Image (cartoon, rainbow, N blue to C red; front, side, top):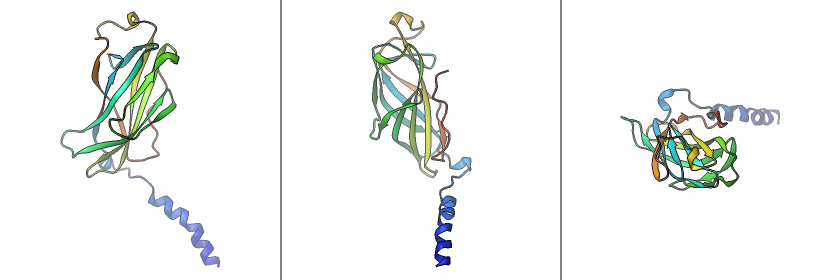
Length: 172
């Protein structure tokens, strides 16, 4: 009976060693994450929108880094200023945000997704998308093309640890 109890107590330790993540950077997926959006204007990497308008992330996609094998993403979770909004599990991973209740100012929409790449460990990527909500369209800085739809490619942080610490989600 004591042997059985000892084995049952040792099982969690064995399981803990099986779920640890690799620290080998060669196992981390190498991808670029991009989004297509509408209802906002890109000014120097920040998406500007007028309070009360709807900003939409129409699609989220990944492209493998040059010289690497095919990759894909799955289950995109959206977090606004540290508060979860939801998960979009089906491509094109879209979401629409009505900015009526958003305070005027800077916000961060963080996209968290599972990244799968041939020959690599399963990874997690975080991509912060800076958003600025303004009172009127005249508050959007000059030098930008208002409205329309475009592609925005940001810096994604990837990790092959499911429990890794994401990039900051609070506005700066």
